[in-house]
Length: 152
Image (cartoon, rainbow, N blue to C red; front, side, top):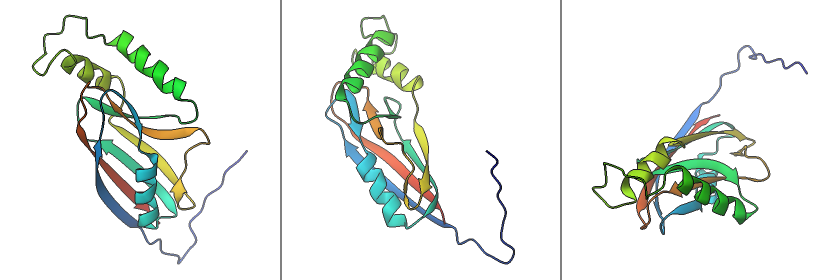
């Protein structure tokens, strides 16, 4: 399939931008679906075609796009992550408790941002996809997530 694109002469693109800080309270270790909150920012921006960047401002939490239909996926991911970065390992950095350094390691192998296309005014996620804030600490925290929307 060939895709052709071209600018129409004389047509100006009206770029729009919006940025919002979301404060999200977690209840401890696990994945929290933030898709509805991010979708509201996109809808409020009135951008029809563009990109949405979601960024978490922490080093012990991360973002992932993952299946949103079967909760067993989230349980399996949490168990897998605990196997990769176990608390039982001897970690030098433990200033804030036994889950401190494992949380940093888990965040290091995941992502602090996700970029999602905006298609017809909505997040261009697939049918079974959702945006998740992944809390890697045992106790709940207030996490800051910046949502940046840009397009036309």
